[in-house]
Image (cartoon, rainbow, N blue to C red; front, side):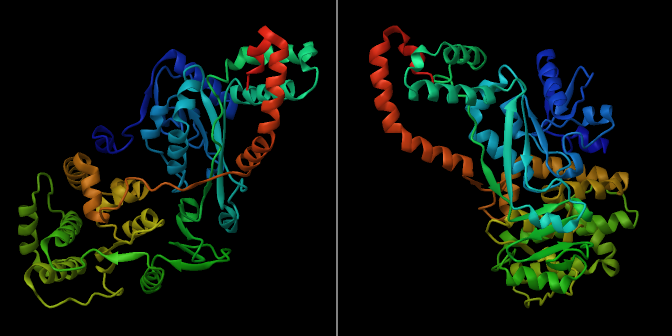
Length: 465
């Protein structure tokens, strides 16, 4: 995997941690979450705070993701929102973390200036040893606080200040005032510098999980897809090898569309690229050197081995001939090896998930596999020859990394985002708190004004909220 790491195609965009202050904060958070510490003087972290170096040191690649179910996280900087999520066990986890950081960026920036923020992506399931439990994961909730409990203290100060404003004769309650002063020394001025975080809930309707060999869960359609779907699954199960059932499901649910919708060279260019990748797979299998191979070289390889071209290649070439030269329309069905190569996900909330599924059905297209299904790409990469590895690294570095957005727009449509993030929903605690505040606001304002008129120089304490 060294060529991928050196080119930034693996472990790219990780955050380098080498400051003693940040390492100390990381250790406090790590000990708070797991009871462990690292002795490393520098390491790299992903969006969740997971470090492959720390994982190696501890001998536990799941030290922040116990049982691969409720992922814990450590935030040292808001810059983590641009980092990848390594070894994701659920396809929605990175989007949830990224949206959480973006929604609370100002507050997290202030909190991480002095401490680490530690938390967890919580759902009602703590183990997926029973595959049916995957279907019980419907919402993800984020819970977070600093290692010193700043948010907890801020909530406590808010509760005490509510008592101070609401209770008669609170100005004469020395114990209450002392408690407020003590907590305020830890939180600072929460009126000017709020330290609350939006604890959002995220729906998890459709998702992929690495558990049980990799499963695609389409909850709304009541369908689970995988290489070997466990028999315990109560939902309709479709095996990845059942091409006819898969094609019918994707079509009936309106989840896919053809890459080529009309004649012209634009869409045909995508198929030509896929044809090149299929040739690369064939050439590697035949022991043909690939280092420095150009598109012209690939065409010469195709001519020299015309009798051995894979069926995917010939099917796609007929479709390109229709689009560019007016040749007869080639009828391609799910029984044809090229069928899924001709499709992409239709616009909709499941677009990223469907493109990931298609990449697994079209493994010879290493570019789509790299974009949509990193773990599957890395597994495949390990089994390639050195020349094929070098070709893939050079191509991805030159063609994809140079213009990610442009490449994705060409492959998946102009509406395709780099990351499709789950939609946040307002949690019950948010609604309850908002209703409570609305009901008390007028009464509190009246009482506060009355008390502030009576206490003179103590009025600044009355404004602590």
